[in-house]
Image (tube, rainbow, N blue to C red; front, side, top):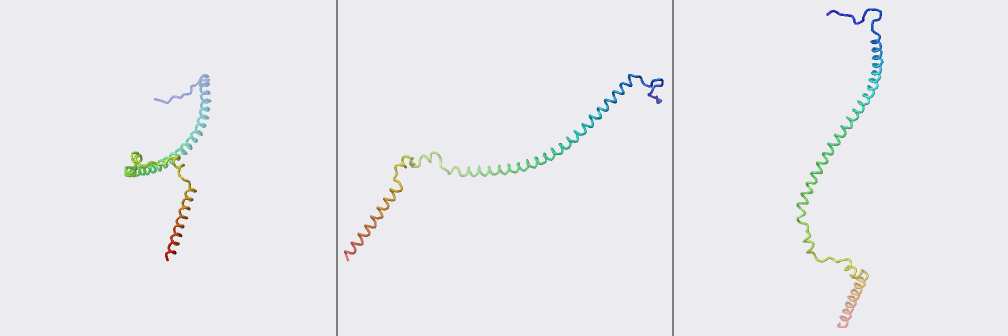
Length: 145
């Protein structure tokens, strides 16, 4: 097919209406160009944000791996504790064993017991009586000689 020129020949190469449409398209294209420029700036900021998010994700993954290791160690520790309790608890006293213990004193019963001062006084009397008996024994021995 032979080439055909697009431009018409004659006094007015293009119809007036087509000229208006092309001019409006050119205006719209300049608006689109400005919008694309704004979008390019935003895309650049989004790319920077994405890079920062990738860095944070890497740190989070590393932290998660460390936490997984710690959780594994905790699980092993809990297993050891469970084994220890399983081995130890049967030897500990039960409620029935505690019920068979002798009666423990209540606060009222403890309040009725003698005080420290009274007990020191009894001890002093006993020591005096012991020394008195010792002295009497020495006097008896001296008389027998």
